[in-house]
Amino acid sequence: MLSTLSTGEVFETLKMIDEEHLDVRTITMGINLLDCASANPERACNKIYDKICRRADKLVQVGEDIEKEYGIPIINKRISVTPISLVAAASDTDNYLPFAAALDRAASEVGVNFIGGFSALVHKGYTDSDRILIKSIPEALASTEKVCASVNVASTTAGINMDAIEQLGRTIKSAAELTASTGGLACAKLVVFANAVEDNPFMAGAFHGTGEPETVINVGVSGPGVVKAALTGVKGADFGVVAETIKKTAFKVTRMGQLVAQEASRRLDAPFGIVDISLAPTPEVGDSVAYILEEMGLEKCGTHGTTAALALLNDAVKKGGTMASGYVGGLSGAFIPVSEDAGMISAVQEGALSLDKLEAMTCVCSVGLDMICVPGDTPASTLSGIIADEAAIGVVNNKTTAVRIIPAPGRKVGDVVEFGGLLGTGPVMPVNKYSSEGFIARKGRIPAPMHSLKN
Image 1: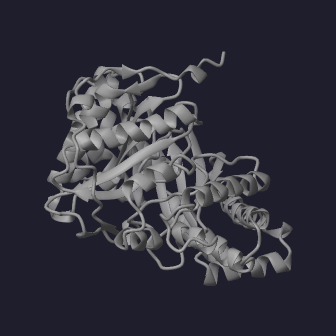
Image 2 (image 1 turned 90 degrees about the vertical axis):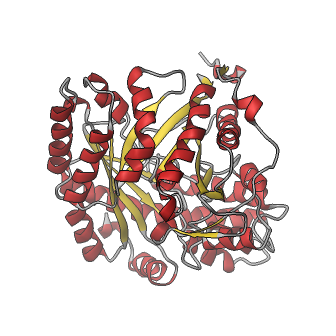
């Protein structure tokens, strides 16, 4: 609670907010929609709209009130819902576009930034409903403003669904082509996961898992600028000091996030779920994970030593955050999206950071290849190969990984795609020129690794 903070801690937090880009990146309300299922698709869509509007009608206002009262910037207010492939399965229809439209209308009505959950979980195979939903994704994302989609294609216990990965390469290409005028913007609202979590508050991959309560409040904090500022005070110190400094900073950031989460939970009469302690960057200079790594002594993010620096950062953030809250969850660590991080953009443009190096970095950070722009003529099989590699990292290392990749129509290596807002600016990165076609065409399922047998 705010009353437990000392005067010094309050002033320190205000300094972080005013000078170091500290904010709560999102308050996300999760809403169960399973009770909206109906054989009549129109009735199901109406129930979905009504329930979201009823449950989340005060979400934005509460977020704004907390922001004003406590002086803590809350950048986004969002909603996640039960994967629509589960809800729509009861409906007698082969077209899920009306479900996406219902989500979009509800999100607009309550005033949130995004709504996540146009999703399917196919890590071990498809249901008929999953097939319909994935087929609907390109048009659904192209025809809506606020709807986000995700597909979980792999897990450590099930292995990797290569049928789904092959299809999603083509799905991403189609989504890009339908939004060519905006640089393939639909692809920025689609995440392909391995080991997806049920309580992620961040978009575009958030959905409300089946193990979650009827409604729940999850909060995602930020703070790359705060961590970088803290590290400037320990220049030249050994890595033990660096790790301790990051841990202490993550502790303070997480306490602020928990304060907001508990207060939002109380005012909205919904259980407090988790605080996601991921360091979420923005395109603003100073609010960058890449700059944190460079503060450790790297001339440019992407040079040799970058993966080790990121591993230290991710581990220290988790340790500090876990000490600050008993309910840390979601993804929690450090995001390394290219277009959303000014330092990453610079590193790519200066030739320091490649797609291969980013893939190596995803072995030790939260999620994976995020907001990556590639040439518009990149084959679907190459996109599938990139997804397969990232899924393998997640499955073998028993961690969440993901791909959010944008084959920008008409763009080539060196071009820049302007998305605006938090999505930022995407420099188009080269992909390997050799084909993955024969590999992806095999399809089937890559078996789970030996260490999945834990029972």
